[in-house]
Image (cartoon, rainbow, N blue to C red; front, side, top):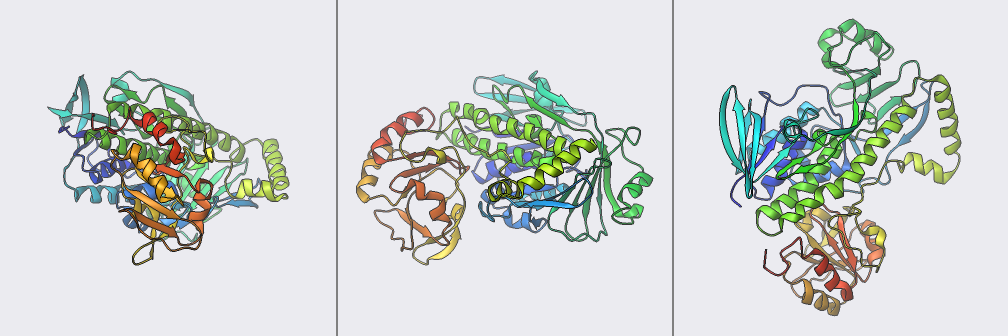
Amino acid sequence: MTAPILIAGAGPVGLTAANLLATRGVPVVLVERNASTSDEAKAISLDDESLRTLQAAGLDGAVLDIVVPGTGTRYYDRRSRPLFQARGPEPYRLGHPFKNQFAQPELERVLLQNLKDRDGVDIRFGTELADVVETRDGVTAVLDASGARTELRASWVLGCDGGRSTIRELKGIGMTGTSHQEVWLVADTIGDHHDERYGMHLGRPDRPTVIVPGRDGRCRYEFRLRPGEGRGGTRPDFATIARLVSPYRTITPEQVERATNYTFNAVVADRWRDGRCFLLGDAAHMMPPFAGQGLNSGVRDAANLAWKLAEVWHGRAAERLLDTYEPERRPHAEATVAFSERLGRVVMTVDPMRGRLRDTAVRALLLAPWSRRYLTEMRFRPRPVHAGGVVVRTGHGDERLVGSQLPQPRVLVPPGLRPRRLDDVLGDGPVLLGVDVAPAAWERVDAHLSAWRMPRLDVVLGDRLPRPRDGRQAIADADGRLQSALAAARGRFVLVKPDRYIAAVFPSARAALVRDALAGYFDLEGTI
């Protein structure tokens, strides 16, 4: 293909998708109806999987300069007493802090600046997508810049244009779910004294409250408003802001960076693809903010779709690969929307009786080790797993690994043996790992998969030295976490997708089955 991919919407999801595509050598045209990036109070939590995605675009270092590497969320009872702190299952399991506070305007500026430095990227602010006309091999998009209309030929169109998506409307795609009417006030402030590196959810039925400290004296406050205190979509007056934050600090008008009253939705688009147009982020799904997963779900969308578009654009995969985007992402997005709703009903209830029952139940769960881990390690949060799409289940080995995300431990790489992050070794494409397999097993696998040009790595478990052989790189465990991640696959091969989800775990005798299952997607015989 030669035509660029058109991305509508320069929010975090559109900017992330553009960076990922540009990293993979795909030309991009990014259009945004507004004159600049946003300065509104929006997302504030970036998780470890999102940072791992930004690492793939070479952005994690710049983003870490603007976030607070956090330690999860602390939940408080109806009397503002601590209940427990949820820190995630394992520190740095994906190579980054589990939860990180940030200001969305700063994140957008970092993502945009990095994009400006890339070749093959055309950025157009003050430009709106007005129409799309599809043909068999492309899209003609009508762009409107201050009333001046032009046409652009594109190969694919990504709708990253938010809850009021133009692309979704042009394609007549509905959304299913619930619109919530309760109003919340959110205020980003400066000059704050809070120095906690965790978010605070105060489950007070009289005034459910969220407090999230940030960098350099910044702090996010969110309050559930009572009837008559404000309407969604309006800016709150300073007197209301000062009154609500008064239990926590005194504030002046100059210390309010941005504030708004908002309502939220729990909805999912009825379909995420229509021909050559795709929906990502809020255009595809909107959820309550209580789990901090709205933005992170959009970044997952970008990570899933970008590598597939790149493979198709470069002619290394068939277009049907793009049909796997929604089957892989929709189930987790739907589960996260439902989870966010449930969490809000429990944590942010305004019913005193429900608040009392919640506090009693949580304290009882904290008494037993297994249920305490369930809470403190956030095992209640939906786990992203690809049940369909680019996954192959061979019936051999630990099938629980298939469809899950490969952790990112530190590994030793010869000849220097300096510890490195796993993804920095794997590269940005698919990769085949042989976990403590014999050379003869590699020969049998290569007999079936040699046409698929991807890196092949020997994974050495235990406290042993890695030795490259037969043109393959080798990696060894640096800290025990590689052993923990792949011990169940010892003696087998692990096929890892570019988004670091595992496509297959199989013995060499099942290599032909894997090849046949994936031949419809990838150029395994040089015929695509």
